[in-house]
Length: 409
Length: 170
Image (cartoon, rainbow over all chains, first blue to last red; front, side):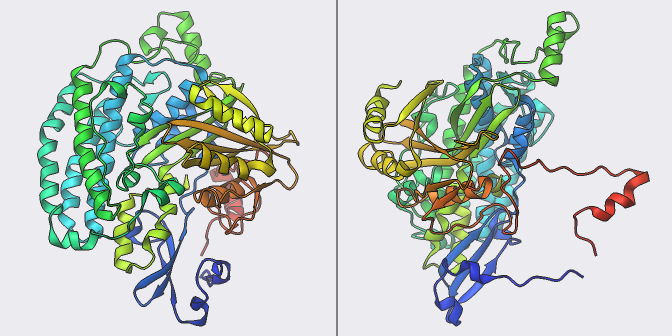
């Protein structure tokens, strides 16, 4: 039997009040194995009865050293690690990484690939919000929404499987375009989804939006004002629920987002309910984008033909000597990126997902840093939960929509 | 350079003798370690940089001075511009002033940089490791920290390697 070590609370002395050490308040561990922490998050709570005096998040249980590992791989091979960061937003992570690589080596993306990328990441946004709405309901004891949300998510994962052969870790978006063109069934599959999904969102709303039990748990809980949110670097739906109209898709359009007509849902209340409303509205906005992108999907190649960075298609390898050489060089040695660093950010379902990529002239990145939105969004939680009940902590944590893989990297 | 950035870079040059580099349309301003807090305060109060997106670092080992660059990525929502501040730090006992009083998000981000690179942030209210366990030795993202690997076990040496493998045993 291994000895279980006593937790040393001395190191938390500066983070909790003195009353915790005189026995007036209680120190309680929540997690790392707790169903409402959405992964492996440990929270040290200082409780006065059932009221939270202080909360200290302890993260790092899912740290897998992705940044270090990426430094040891070539640019093309390192991308595989990006899927595994935020496992609810795989294609979004691919896009963030590919955009950084494309910026570093100055690679153009053909219009068809851009439009397909937009469709895929918007589908991924819907899938991510579906998991969120399901688990959000689950945390607030609304079991049924979870079952419905996962039914629709399955449909999106089927579309990803259709394109790439994989449901989650697709690595479908590659530097310079996509891995390959989407199959012919793709359009019908997406259109079917678009036909069904608006009604399904109405169903979720019928179950939750005006449900008095749901409202009692959410209204006025975990209020976050815009100034605090910005100070903590909070982005995404959480920031928009606090009244700041900020979305990178509108502010710094990438992948042709400027061509599509969509709104940014904003609420000013800043509480858990506002965050719920913003995300539900985002379902509808994402659908608008997908529909427009699908309607004017251009024809053409889905990969850049810059052979120094993008592997040639399989069909060329058999007939062209150069294609074979490029294929061989790119998959063994990889391409070299110039010395210098870029920062490129996209709007993930959780907020600003940034990649800092630094090249040193060789085939492997010198440094990759992921500016993940959940990391900042979680850092504000201790402020939000102060003075609330433990049950409200569950609601607040669920409304931040954190993904621990995204935080710990 | 973006027109909106010109007055900002100029102000930094005048007040902090900063230099700058441009790469792929991005502006990287180099500021001395002692002046980073003032530079960030100036950007926040005068130039509407409401948000510090991230703090990270990069290790240029075996180069000793400067060995690290601490990187501050700032965003202005009002003006819709970004700027990057870079602080060169020496290899032995690397130290930077903490930015927690300017941007609260710096608290966790600096803890991460400390955890991964061993760069100390003077005056940090909570200088603990954030991602690695407390008893970790070394700082994993430094270039002289080896990437870990696992010894593959075969039938002929399974037991031998199993003995020194660091996993929980009954």
